[in-house]
Image 1 (cartoon, rainbow, N blue to C red):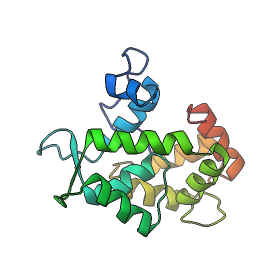
Image 2 (cartoon, one colour):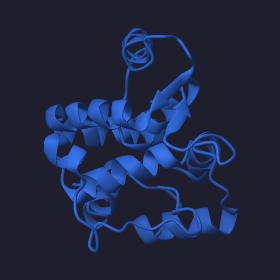
Image 3 (cartoon, rainbow, N blue to C red):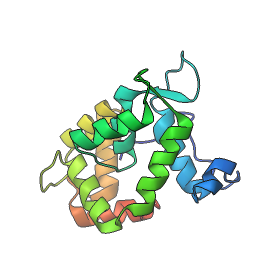
Length: 173
């Protein structure tokens, strides 16, 4: 997984769940996870609380949600019915809450692993991490990516079992 951006940190242990998250039956940690993925694509020079429709898929991928082209088109139509090219925070968190409610952990783990391995059986390599970092607009060095691989597996590749261990240590499972 790419490292967190500088200045970005989860505040779930010090803050309460928002009214909207409570309504959606999300924990503070889940709300923070969704917010972090959303905020990665907020235009710093644009209005707060909105992302471009072109970034919705990437934000969903950052959360481990995969969608076919057809499903993504339906999601965009739902989130942006006026076809303005933007998606508001409230709409995005509602979508993600629904997705979180229905995800199966093992299937999600395998899907997330396949996202890292570019839809192959693996293992995850430094080239896969570079691609993911580029897609998520993360600025990381080869040294940081090598450190991530070494921490995850003790080597330069990560198999599915090692990936599951990383996800558990990160609290994603």
